[in-house]
Length: 182
Image (cartoon, rainbow, N blue to C red; front, side, top):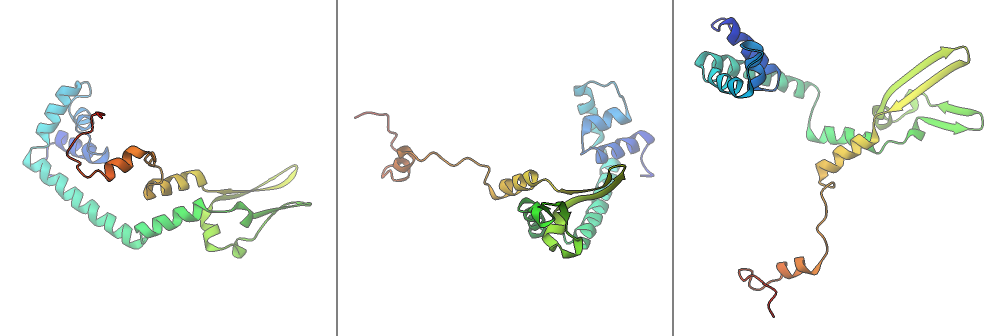
């Protein structure tokens, strides 16, 4: 970014850090009080500057390389993400704790399955005047199931099962419009 002016550098930094919002980048670098239209026009003009474009492209390439390394290191794949969501969505708290006549018993983590361990978001212990309290919290099943439902398309409404759809599907002459005439 050595070949950019200080304001151009600030514009590029803000542009890349705030989701490529031209208006916000222009306001941060040039004029905090600029109205929307002015900020958009001047910010768009700044984005046409060859030096600014080159710096942004270099930064994007470096970010892509870093992202690829993260994806590879942590094996971030569609299958792994879905597996984690399923672990959370179908987790059962009774695999972690059990309620008996004597109270609540927490199982040792070594005795838990990998799926159950991965569904746990927090384990904490508090010692107070009344004794020891252990808190076990699982990740949100509702959120996990919602993500799975959206991914699988289960959140989309089913078409109404009515005769009109069947008639449209089986219409021998679909180019002719039925105007309700006998």
